[in-house]
Length: 186
Image (cartoon, rainbow, N blue to C red; front, side, top):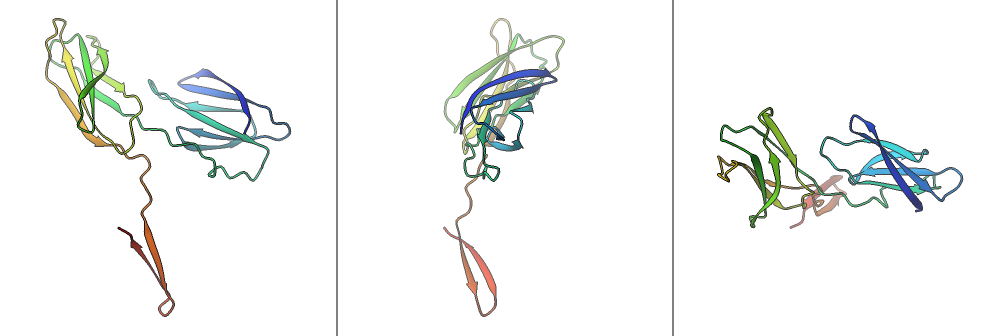
C-alpha cells in the first residue's frame, strides 16, 4: 500500500476533510477507517469525518488498484476507547475541578484540571484513550482558591470492552437427526 502523504483541513462544524496522496496510477481505490472501524471505499483521495468537540480520531487509509481488495484482510487495529465525563457545577466554593483516574484499582492519577466559571453549570472532560479489558474509576473534586477540596463525585467503576474475544465453540453434526450442536469450550 502506497499512501505517500496526507493532509487534513477543518471544514467547520467539527468536520475535517482528510486528503491523501498516492503513488499509484490509474483507478485507485481508497479504503478508510476511523479509530479502527471501517468507513467505506472511495475512488476520490479525500474523505470528510465528523469529530465531536474535544474528541480525537485516528484515520487510516489503504490505497490499492485492486477493485476486489478485501478490506477485512488488512484492517488496522481497533483503537482504544475514550470516556467523556459529565458533571454539574458544585455548590462548594470552586476555582477548578480536579479529575483523577484509577485503572484496575491501582493508584489515583491526576488527568486534568478544568477551570470553574461562574457562568457555567455543566462541564465535561474527555479522557485519553483507555486500555481494553481494564476497569476504570474517575473522581471529580471541586477545589477552592485556597486548595480546600469539596464534595467528590465518583464515576464508575467501568470495564472497557471494545473487542471481546470470540467464543471458543465446538460444532457437531448428527446425520441421523440432521441436528447441529454448538458447545462452548471451556
